Amino acid sequence: MHYLQAADAHPHDILLCIGTAKAFSDPKRLRYDAKQFFLKTGEEMAEVFKDYPDALAQTMRIAERCDVRIPEGENFLPDFDVPIGYTVDSYFEKVARDGFAHRLPRLKQLALEGALRHTIDEYERRLTYELDMIKNDEVPGVLPHRLGLHPACAREGIPVGPGRGSAAGSLVAYCMRITDVDPIDLRPDLRALPEPGPHLAAGYRHRLLRAPPQRGHRDVTQKYGRDKVAQIITFGTMKAKAVVRDVGRVLEMSFADVDKVAKQIPPALDMTLDKALEES
Image (cartoon, rainbow, N blue to C red; front, top):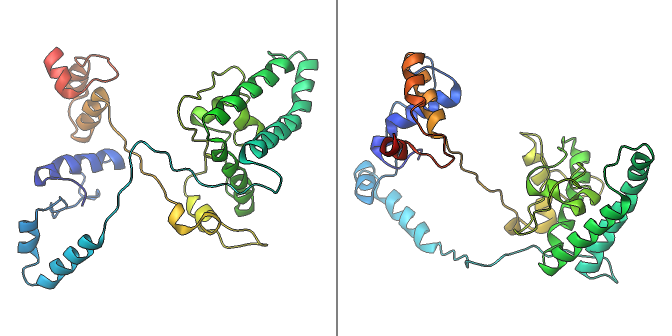
Protein backbone atom coordinates (compact mmCIF):
# COMPACT_ATOMS: atom_id res chain seq x y z
CA MET A 1 0.00 0.00 0.00
CA HIS A 2 1.34 3.42 -0.99
CA TYR A 3 -1.75 5.61 -0.57
CA LEU A 4 -5.18 5.39 1.08
CA GLN A 5 -7.69 5.88 -1.75
CA ALA A 6 -7.80 5.04 -5.44
CA ALA A 7 -8.10 8.77 -6.23
CA ASP A 8 -4.66 9.30 -4.64
CA ALA A 9 -2.89 7.49 -7.48
CA HIS A 10 -2.25 10.65 -9.51
CA PRO A 11 -0.99 12.77 -6.57
CA HIS A 12 1.24 9.83 -5.63
CA ASP A 13 2.60 9.79 -9.17
CA ILE A 14 3.41 13.50 -8.91
CA LEU A 15 5.07 12.94 -5.53
CA LEU A 16 7.28 10.25 -7.07
CA CYS A 17 8.40 12.76 -9.70
CA ILE A 18 9.21 15.34 -7.01
CA GLY A 19 11.16 12.80 -4.97
CA THR A 20 13.16 11.56 -7.95
CA ALA A 21 13.59 15.02 -9.55
CA LYS A 22 11.96 13.89 -12.80
CA ALA A 23 9.43 15.53 -15.09
CA PHE A 24 5.97 13.97 -15.28
CA SER A 25 6.42 13.54 -19.03
CA ASP A 26 9.69 11.60 -18.68
CA PRO A 27 8.99 8.10 -20.12
CA LYS A 28 11.87 6.57 -18.15
CA ARG A 29 10.87 7.86 -14.72
CA LEU A 30 9.77 5.68 -11.80
CA ARG A 31 6.05 4.98 -11.89
CA TYR A 32 3.39 2.62 -10.53
CA ASP A 33 1.20 1.99 -13.54
CA ALA A 34 -1.22 -0.42 -11.84
CA LYS A 35 -2.86 2.36 -9.79
CA GLN A 36 -3.95 -0.30 -7.30
CA PHE A 37 -1.63 0.54 -4.42
CA PHE A 38 -4.39 1.89 -2.15
CA LEU A 39 -6.02 0.50 0.99
CA LYS A 40 -8.80 -1.72 -0.29
CA THR A 41 -11.98 -2.58 1.59
CA GLY A 42 -12.78 -6.14 2.65
CA GLU A 43 -15.20 -6.44 -0.24
CA GLU A 44 -12.60 -5.26 -2.74
CA MET A 45 -10.01 -7.72 -1.38
CA ALA A 46 -12.56 -10.54 -1.58
CA GLU A 47 -13.09 -9.73 -5.25
CA VAL A 48 -9.33 -9.59 -5.95
CA PHE A 49 -8.73 -12.95 -4.22
CA LYS A 50 -11.98 -14.66 -5.15
CA ASP A 51 -10.02 -17.59 -6.55
CA TYR A 52 -7.97 -17.90 -3.34
CA PRO A 53 -10.46 -17.76 -0.44
CA ASP A 54 -7.96 -19.41 1.90
CA ALA A 55 -5.66 -16.38 1.59
CA LEU A 56 -8.37 -14.15 3.07
CA ALA A 57 -9.16 -16.67 5.79
CA GLN A 58 -5.51 -16.89 6.84
CA THR A 59 -5.29 -13.11 6.94
CA MET A 60 -8.26 -12.98 9.32
CA ARG A 61 -6.74 -15.68 11.53
CA ILE A 62 -3.52 -13.66 11.85
CA ALA A 63 -5.43 -10.45 12.57
CA GLU A 64 -7.51 -12.11 15.28
CA ARG A 65 -4.35 -13.33 17.02
CA CYS A 66 -2.94 -9.80 17.26
CA ASP A 67 -3.80 -7.91 20.44
CA VAL A 68 -1.45 -5.02 21.21
CA ARG A 69 -2.40 -2.41 23.77
CA ILE A 70 0.01 0.42 24.56
CA PRO A 71 -1.08 2.52 27.57
CA GLU A 72 -1.14 6.25 26.90
CA GLY A 73 0.44 8.89 29.07
CA GLU A 74 3.29 6.68 30.32
CA ASN A 75 6.99 6.60 29.53
CA PHE A 76 8.50 3.15 29.09
CA LEU A 77 12.21 3.57 29.69
CA PRO A 78 14.85 0.83 29.44
CA ASP A 79 16.49 -0.51 32.58
CA PHE A 80 20.16 0.39 32.88
CA ASP A 81 22.50 -1.95 34.72
CA VAL A 82 24.92 0.02 36.89
CA PRO A 83 28.09 -1.21 38.63
CA ILE A 84 27.81 -2.62 42.14
CA GLY A 85 27.66 0.13 44.75
CA TYR A 86 25.85 2.62 42.52
CA THR A 87 22.26 3.60 41.94
CA VAL A 88 21.17 4.78 38.50
CA ASP A 89 21.21 8.38 39.81
CA SER A 90 24.64 8.18 41.43
CA TYR A 91 26.23 6.39 38.47
CA PHE A 92 24.66 8.85 36.06
CA GLU A 93 26.12 11.78 38.02
CA LYS A 94 29.53 10.09 38.29
CA VAL A 95 29.74 9.53 34.53
CA ALA A 96 28.66 13.10 33.80
CA ARG A 97 31.14 14.63 36.27
CA ASP A 98 33.96 12.36 35.11
CA GLY A 99 33.21 13.52 31.59
CA PHE A 100 33.33 17.14 32.69
CA ALA A 101 36.73 16.50 34.31
CA HIS A 102 37.89 15.09 30.97
CA ARG A 103 36.66 18.20 29.15
CA LEU A 104 38.08 20.58 31.76
CA PRO A 105 41.73 20.81 30.55
CA ARG A 106 40.57 21.96 27.13
CA LEU A 107 38.20 24.51 28.68
CA LYS A 108 40.97 25.85 30.92
CA GLN A 109 43.31 26.13 27.93
CA LEU A 110 40.69 28.13 26.05
CA ALA A 111 40.23 30.34 29.12
CA LEU A 112 43.97 31.06 29.23
CA GLU A 113 43.89 32.00 25.56
CA GLY A 114 40.96 34.34 26.15
CA ALA A 115 38.79 32.24 23.84
CA LEU A 116 36.30 31.00 26.47
CA ARG A 117 33.26 33.25 26.72
CA HIS A 118 32.14 31.88 30.10
CA THR A 119 33.92 31.07 33.34
CA ILE A 120 34.59 27.54 34.57
CA ASP A 121 32.26 28.28 37.49
CA GLU A 122 29.43 28.92 35.03
CA TYR A 123 30.04 25.53 33.43
CA GLU A 124 29.98 23.84 36.86
CA ARG A 125 26.75 25.60 37.88
CA ARG A 126 25.11 24.68 34.59
CA LEU A 127 26.17 21.04 35.00
CA THR A 128 24.76 20.86 38.53
CA TYR A 129 21.52 22.47 37.38
CA GLU A 130 21.05 19.99 34.53
CA LEU A 131 21.91 16.99 36.70
CA ASP A 132 19.34 18.01 39.28
CA MET A 133 16.67 18.61 36.66
CA ILE A 134 17.26 15.28 34.92
CA LYS A 135 17.24 13.34 38.20
CA ASN A 136 14.08 15.11 39.36
CA ASP A 137 12.40 14.02 36.13
CA GLU A 138 13.41 10.41 36.88
CA VAL A 139 15.02 9.88 33.48
CA PRO A 140 18.78 9.66 34.22
CA GLY A 141 18.90 6.11 32.82
CA VAL A 142 18.05 7.39 29.35
CA LEU A 143 21.46 9.02 28.91
CA PRO A 144 23.89 6.27 30.00
CA HIS A 145 22.42 3.96 27.36
CA ARG A 146 24.00 6.19 24.74
CA LEU A 147 27.46 5.73 26.23
CA GLY A 148 27.85 2.33 24.62
CA LEU A 149 26.73 3.47 21.19
CA HIS A 150 29.77 5.58 20.33
CA PRO A 151 32.32 2.82 21.03
CA ALA A 152 30.11 0.46 19.03
CA CYS A 153 30.07 2.95 16.14
CA ALA A 154 33.85 3.24 16.34
CA ARG A 155 34.23 -0.57 16.16
CA GLU A 156 31.93 -0.74 13.15
CA GLY A 157 33.51 2.25 11.37
CA ILE A 158 30.24 4.20 11.53
CA PRO A 159 30.68 8.00 11.28
CA VAL A 160 28.90 9.87 14.10
CA GLY A 161 27.93 13.54 13.98
CA PRO A 162 28.62 16.09 16.75
CA GLY A 163 25.01 16.12 17.96
CA ARG A 164 21.54 17.18 16.93
CA GLY A 165 18.20 18.32 18.31
CA SER A 166 17.63 19.41 21.89
CA ALA A 167 20.46 17.17 23.14
CA ALA A 168 22.94 19.59 21.55
CA GLY A 169 21.86 22.16 24.15
CA SER A 170 22.73 19.92 27.10
CA LEU A 171 26.00 20.23 28.97
CA VAL A 172 25.41 16.79 30.49
CA ALA A 173 25.28 15.29 26.99
CA TYR A 174 28.45 17.19 26.10
CA CYS A 175 30.26 15.89 29.20
CA MET A 176 29.13 12.33 28.46
CA ARG A 177 30.38 12.69 24.86
CA ILE A 178 26.93 12.04 23.47
CA THR A 179 27.38 15.37 21.71
CA ASP A 180 30.58 17.18 20.82
CA VAL A 181 29.41 20.79 20.63
CA ASP A 182 29.95 23.14 23.58
CA PRO A 183 26.35 24.07 24.49
CA ILE A 184 27.00 26.74 27.12
CA ASP A 185 25.50 29.50 24.97
CA LEU A 186 22.40 27.41 24.24
CA ARG A 187 19.39 27.17 26.51
CA PRO A 188 18.97 23.63 27.88
CA ASP A 189 15.62 22.15 26.82
CA LEU A 190 14.73 19.97 29.80
CA ARG A 191 10.96 20.17 29.58
CA ALA A 192 10.48 17.11 27.40
CA LEU A 193 11.76 13.55 27.60
CA PRO A 194 15.39 13.61 26.40
CA GLU A 195 16.18 12.05 23.05
CA PRO A 196 19.97 12.15 22.95
CA GLY A 197 20.57 9.75 20.09
CA PRO A 198 23.78 9.88 18.04
CA HIS A 199 23.58 11.31 14.54
CA LEU A 200 24.65 8.29 12.48
CA ALA A 201 25.68 8.55 8.86
CA ALA A 202 22.96 7.44 6.45
CA GLY A 203 23.00 3.78 5.54
CA TYR A 204 24.90 2.59 8.61
CA ARG A 205 22.13 2.11 11.16
CA HIS A 206 21.59 -1.57 10.39
CA ARG A 207 25.24 -2.24 11.24
CA LEU A 208 24.71 -0.88 14.74
CA LEU A 209 21.48 -2.77 15.28
CA ARG A 210 22.72 -6.04 13.84
CA ALA A 211 26.49 -5.82 14.23
CA PRO A 212 28.31 -9.19 14.43
CA PRO A 213 29.77 -9.85 17.91
CA GLN A 214 33.42 -8.84 18.09
CA ARG A 215 35.78 -9.47 21.00
CA GLY A 216 32.91 -10.06 23.38
CA HIS A 217 30.94 -6.96 22.35
CA ARG A 218 27.21 -7.17 21.74
CA ASP A 219 25.12 -5.18 19.33
CA VAL A 220 22.11 -3.14 20.46
CA THR A 221 19.62 -5.94 19.85
CA GLN A 222 21.73 -8.52 21.68
CA LYS A 223 22.28 -6.17 24.62
CA TYR A 224 18.71 -5.10 25.27
CA GLY A 225 16.69 -7.90 23.68
CA ARG A 226 14.92 -8.11 20.37
CA ASP A 227 11.58 -7.18 21.96
CA LYS A 228 13.05 -3.92 23.31
CA VAL A 229 14.69 -2.46 20.19
CA ALA A 230 12.73 -0.71 17.48
CA GLN A 231 13.20 1.89 14.79
CA ILE A 232 10.86 4.85 14.60
CA ILE A 233 9.19 6.41 11.59
CA THR A 234 9.10 10.08 10.72
CA PHE A 235 6.60 11.82 8.48
CA GLY A 236 7.72 14.53 6.12
CA THR A 237 5.37 17.27 5.00
CA MET A 238 5.63 19.82 2.23
CA LYS A 239 4.94 23.50 2.81
CA ALA A 240 2.24 25.14 0.71
CA LYS A 241 4.55 27.42 -1.30
CA ALA A 242 7.12 24.69 -1.85
CA VAL A 243 4.57 22.18 -3.07
CA VAL A 244 3.15 24.63 -5.60
CA ARG A 245 6.61 25.30 -7.01
CA ASP A 246 7.56 21.58 -7.00
CA VAL A 247 4.36 20.45 -8.71
CA GLY A 248 4.67 23.25 -11.28
CA ARG A 249 8.24 22.16 -12.04
CA VAL A 250 7.26 18.49 -12.39
CA LEU A 251 4.39 19.38 -14.73
CA GLU A 252 6.76 21.65 -16.70
CA MET A 253 4.54 24.68 -16.26
CA SER A 254 5.76 28.18 -16.96
CA PHE A 255 7.96 29.48 -14.16
CA ALA A 256 6.24 32.87 -14.33
CA ASP A 257 2.78 31.31 -13.89
CA VAL A 258 3.90 29.12 -11.01
CA ASP A 259 5.71 32.00 -9.34
CA LYS A 260 2.60 34.17 -9.60
CA VAL A 261 0.53 31.54 -7.79
CA ALA A 262 3.18 30.81 -5.17
CA LYS A 263 3.51 34.48 -4.26
CA GLN A 264 -0.21 34.61 -3.49
CA ILE A 265 0.24 32.13 -0.62
CA PRO A 266 0.58 33.97 2.73
CA PRO A 267 3.98 33.35 4.42
CA ALA A 268 2.68 31.69 7.63
CA LEU A 269 4.33 28.62 9.14
CA ASP A 270 1.06 26.69 9.41
CA MET A 271 -0.18 27.71 5.98
CA THR A 272 -1.99 25.10 3.88
CA LEU A 273 -3.39 25.31 0.36
CA ASP A 274 -6.95 25.31 1.71
CA LYS A 275 -6.16 28.19 4.08
CA ALA A 276 -4.40 30.05 1.30
CA LEU A 277 -7.52 29.79 -0.88
CA GLU A 278 -9.59 31.24 1.94
CA GLU A 279 -7.21 34.08 2.82
CA SER A 280 -5.92 35.08 -0.62
